[in-house]
Image (tube, rainbow, N blue to C red; front, side, top):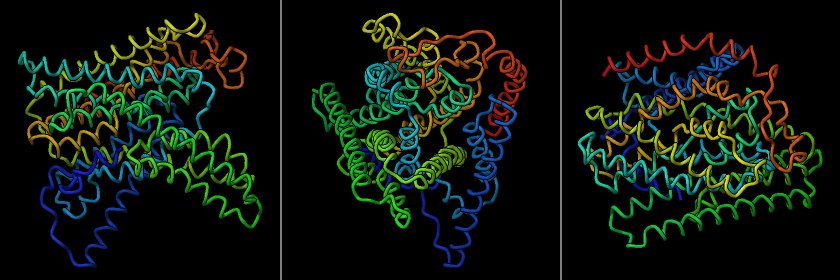
Length: 510
């Protein structure tokens, strides 16, 4: 499914400001330029990991690792943009959708499914699907309609209704990597973590399906039954992707159980096969026109709980460390990659009102998504399993926009008229930067204010003793108490000051 989205990107280059291909360099020069580009990428990765370690060690939650990686990419990209850096070197950092979807995204999603505890996920599966399908649809439509009405009332740059709905679809793809990392580090309720994570993964498929449908409507390729076909297409995509992922996972479990690979001299083969199965699942779904994201997620969950136990001890240690390492590298590189490309791309800053009101509209749409869906979920649940209001607020707050929205916005540059596509891309870029820096940086304060961290009674081991749900129980003296509160208050003013200084410098550059 994601492959079809990116067919248009094969003809024009991904970099908006690099319309003409760079002149061919001599073979020796090309190799030197490639070496410099790769060296710069590795240097930024090293700097990101070192800086992330220092921030975690000092418990500085106002600048999470993802935000730090994005800032490093922005700074280095800005320096390269204003310097006389060679065009051939700069092309190494263009954000290519194919590279993101085929190489960076799969290990991140697989590790998420591989490390996810299935009990809270499936106990909240109905709520997750409600937020991911109905909630994403509500957020997309509300955002698109508000943007269209804003254009009609001359509050912002006017776009056609279909293009507004395309923008609403792509900007509804959430990517709360920063929030989830802080959830894990501080220790949040397992149900809240499952809701945030599950919604963010499954809503990507819904956002892509909505975007494709609106794109086909714009090109007059769809008929009048678009809403029904969109719902049917999404259900077909989701069920098919889940089935293919589960099927590949069970095939791998049967192979490792009966093939007799858990002997000393076959451990290399065992590890190689285990590593290949997730990519096989992802590419199989993409080749069938389904969602590789959903497929590899369920493959990771099945392989962890059925295939993993059939490995030898040494292979278990290896694959656990390998996928954790691969996911960390890909996750960090995505934010560096995105930050560098944001600084290098040509943006349309002439419609500041469109950016300002779009930010307000997505906040309103996110609230309509979360609170309406939570109300429906709570109506069908018994009292002890209802989603608390504090969890609903945390869900509303954690709707960061990330690489998925950025990749779809970059796709819209190739599909829409130049002025419209550039405006949508610039707006998405601003929203991604602001949500990652501001919302990601203030997550610790939000968790502390809502009192949803440090709950020692929400461990997975105690999950079965509470009828499949862990109600929050927060008492004074838990790990979320005075130490964290003092840390958060200590750095609050300093963080806001740094963010405002950064935004002021960026505005002066423009």
